[in-house]
Image 1 (cartoon, rainbow, N blue to C red):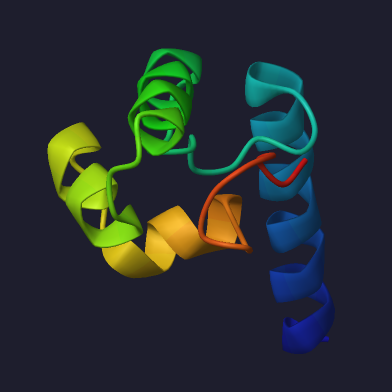
Image 2: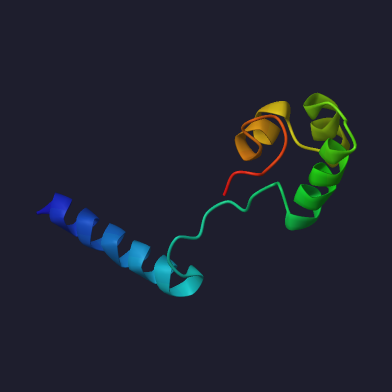
Length: 76
């Protein structure tokens, strides 16, 4: 009985949150379109991926997540 009440309240809370925020809302990407464009320019100029990551203010891991080959076309 108690478990069912918890479940109902949880589901009601989740539904209310979805109505308020919309579905699929999560953390926003740290790599904005402006930073992505800057990164592309720096890579085209021959800068190292590590230097590009530092210049645009993201970690090297984040940089490689968005640019898997270390440069060139960004991942979708």
